Image 1 (cartoon, each protein chain N blue to C red):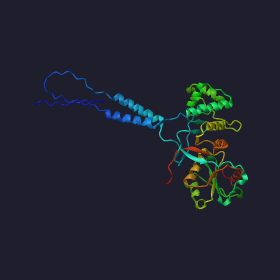
Image 2: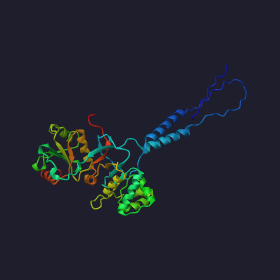
Image 3: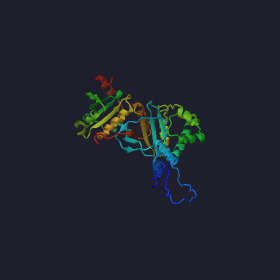
Image 4: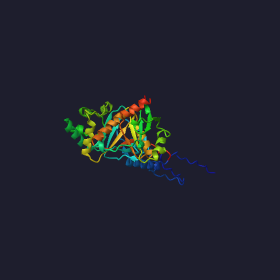
Length: 200
Length: 174
């Protein structure tokens, strides 16, 4: 009687389909996703039932954080470079090409124009650590109004979104709205989180 | 490991064959890499775009006298106070109406906005007056309630002295 040979197989697994699946997912994520923008502050936005989406491009984002600091951000590198040039001309601050480039890569910032130059000259790691005081919105030193006005002159298509924190003081938001209305902006968006419509 | 299973040798013949090096590739590192990339992309991306709420502010009138006075019967005012307090009254502040305290829950202001007093009157204008001390969230919440209740006429108005007096008189929000 012949010996029954136990078939010895290695405990191996064919990983090819798994690799296929993974690469499919990678491709999917790469194509559908836009990189998360680095924000200067974290804000917790209130929720609403509104389902209007914010457009991807041509958006000015005015962020109000819970300490009532105001941050300004706009998308588009060219817009930002042109914008900085205009602001520099208005405030008489000269920016180097390097600083302009840095500025065009910033997502948002909360610095008065007078301190912007030194802020842009910093290393990016140091910039993250520095506490930004926010953009001045007083009536005597209304820089936010200038930023908004110059951005709209640079890129007339922009829409304005206000991204306020839950705990932001209404007075600050009111002031921002007043500034916008002052610049003849009567229509804007409030960025909110999603919330289900009650009873649906 | 990732290997294609070997076919059992038929066991025929004792011929010595040249050892064929297998064409198998170990795929494990590839899987590792792919999983790493997936993780990276999943963490760095935002899937859903932020929602927004669109509001239109009235254009500042050039001539105040051109504005039409709001009738007391068509006015409702919501006051947003400190610490998430919420008050409302019907009519105009000058007539010393009764201020009612309510809250942001579904049984609070939403019921009021859905009540026949508001719903059956097409001319009813809701004025939202946030106090300086109220939070931004309060404003969004109220605008949201307006949207939920499908109130057509509303406006964001500055909190005035008359309202403050009204609250003081009725000992609310102190």
